[in-house]
Length: 110
Length: 111
Image (cartoon, rainbow over all chains, first blue to last red; front, side, top):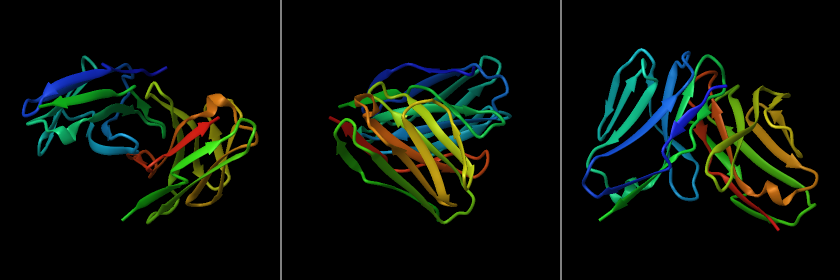
């Protein structure tokens, strides 16, 4: 079946850029998503990208997609303490059901 | 705008007791609805999804069940809880194959 892999932890200094990486196996992926989960809360959709795009930028967030390598990344510029959370990568092909990664805990320290 | 509600927010139940978690969506019609469980390992496990009233698909066989009595209402139930049912339960909705939107979650502790 489809699989989505993420590293479990990332630690960065406040003000630096964070890059969270994700790899997936489903070659028919059409939509790729990034979600943010703060402690004790639900998942919040941050951004998404269609598979026919290479890059999408939204304020401090930049999503890069390398479809050949099935690699997705989320870059957060000028990382702040409020960005500390778990970030989930997800992909969906033509079905209703997305496949989620296990999430990357982003820790921002002063 | 659309909103999704879950209740209760927190629940502590003894082993063997019944369970009922409720999820409702406002501001849209005929949404796809989903129940996920997030255990301590943080990954999301899809439990059930529904594409319409009375249409429930189960992804993982277990002692949980789901029902959709109304278009925008999704209920997760159990007749007898197990310790392993503890976790963070998330409801989500989507329009067909669009992105999912999650509720605030219910923290269930089975003692």
